[in-house]
Image (tube, rainbow, N blue to C red; front, side, top):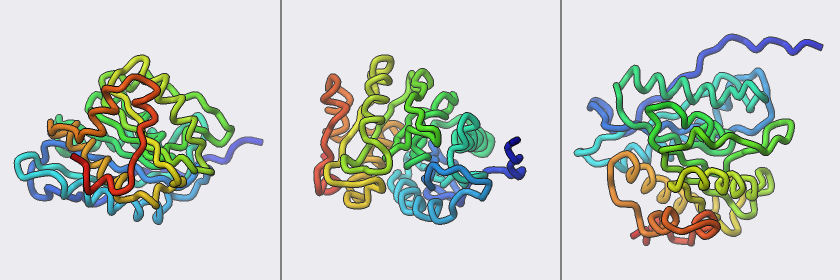
Length: 252
């Protein structure tokens, strides 16, 4: 049976957070989750809304000397859609839209769940400087476990995964990080022990780590000690770094 054609839609950027009214020096694109089940429905409004607090925090974290804007990306459809990989295509469109709106400035992609997978896939765009994948869903509807890594060359890459994630296998992101680390030394991965898929138990710690990573890669700030150590450590140490409770309060 032929697959029914998906309705024609366009992805879009949500409202800007951060240096509104200024010429930003960098942009963070937050790619929400929403689950791997493919559907012709629009991207989940709930998932997009849940991404707003992180986008707002990222936008506020930059200084006046290094103004930064963050946007949440709204997908055309729900799910990954197999080889079509619609969230990754929407992420690529979003980076191109950033260049059109703001000019040639560095971009950090921050994604959760399928948004994490989309961020990693879209990293090959020349404007992308860094990628953070939080609980990335690296297995599609058919259960495929192989993802490309060559597009990550020259980028800083952070992966974070809950050790008790029952929806997205943590070892998939570890094996992905292992392969990426072989071609790119600037890859690290943190494990959040006792936390699950949404990383809600350590939400403050994950947000603090993500902000430090984004500002370090976009605004030339020094990384916090845990991030610096994770990038410097050989595998598997730098790919199984524990994220401690209270991390955001004692980052440096």
